[in-house]
Each structure stands twice: as structure tokens, then as C-alpha cells.
Length: 132
Image (cartoon, rainbow, N blue to C red; front, side, top):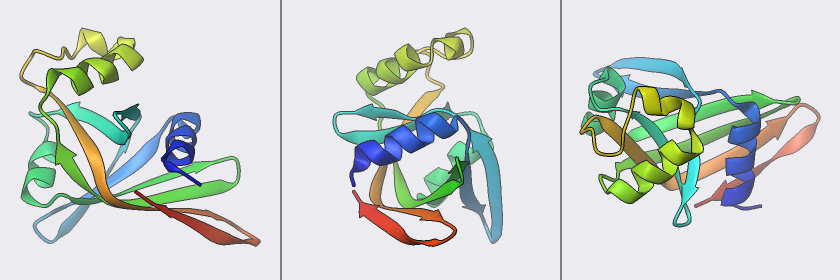
């Protein structure tokens, strides 16, 4: 199992749910962007959003997705990467976002998963875990 399996699962699922914390309140919302760049998995959001502020205050997050009778949970830290290259790579893979975001707009934010533990589960079989 590898980081590629995690990437492929999230791409196939199309929607995953990102959980963060705001003070003592959990926050969960749907996302759909994931990109592999320089051997790391990235997600994308806008810096003006509350989720960005939540991650800045506490980078620990979880992602959950369900697809084809299987689900994936990824516990990780999200690390901001303010370089233009990963932003451009993300937006090139999601051209429909270019109407709202640009790699040079000061709002586009990409974050990579660090200290990640991804667990694949399905009823009737043992879970499988990969770390990256």
C-alpha cells in the first residue's frame, strides 16, 4: 500500500470530508481537491475561509471518504506550502477552479499531509493502514 492508493481513493470518491477543530468545537465540511506533488498529498482551499484559520491554529485534521463499499480515514497534520509551484499544479489539475482561484492571487492555499496515517476499512475485512 502506498500514498498513491490514498490519492487514487480520494480521486475516485470525488468528495471527502475534512474535520478540523475551532476551539472545542469540531467542524466538518466537504472538499473535492487532492493532488500529488513532489511525493506529497495536497489539498486546496481559500485563505479567507474559516477552515484556513482553524488549521493555522491547530494543524491536526482528519479526512474521511466513502467509495464502493469501502471508506478511508486519514489522520494528519496539514502544512501550508506557499510556493507557486504546488498551487499551479493543483489548479492545473482542477481547471474548473481557475474562475475562483489563481496561484498568484494571495488567497489560494495548498496544504500537504504530514505525519499521516491512512486507514482503509470495509465491512467483513480487516482494516489496512499506510503511513506517510
